[in-house]
Length: 175
Image (tube, rainbow, N blue to C red; front, side, top):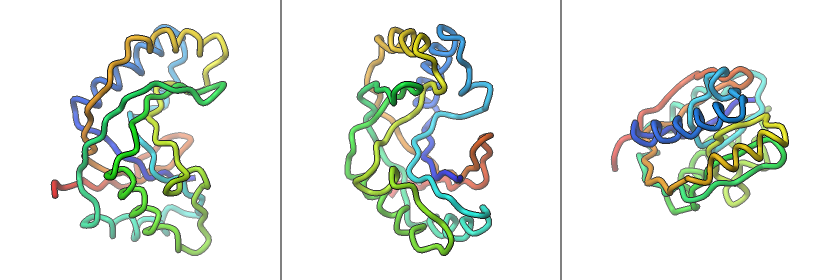
């Protein structure tokens, strides 16, 4: 499994890491920290035999995508194991999602997850995962002080999962 994910400006990254650290401290679940998973918003999850088939179409996106602003407005749960924060789906997120889907959907012997397709996708930024029921309750308590975040997406990455390993990155330009 490979992921195409968005990464954030330094200010947003600091805020999100703070939430990740606070939840880890209170719950004792440090999965995100111990696995070096940076704050990110996944646009696509792709099954492929090799990352090598994904690199050319990923690099072809260099001049097709730009930096963009999102508003991270809420906290949610994917029961029973994940707590996340989420933006509302604005035009920037929709168009980026569509562009990425178009760039990868026709690669032979690959499959894009049904949960990461335009208009069939829940944009979210994981704060903690692999939580027990008790840890989830504590995580929700920690996230009670969440305030909306005006964030900027600055780069897109191609990564392997389990463990997380960055393969390629595209710095996005202002357009």
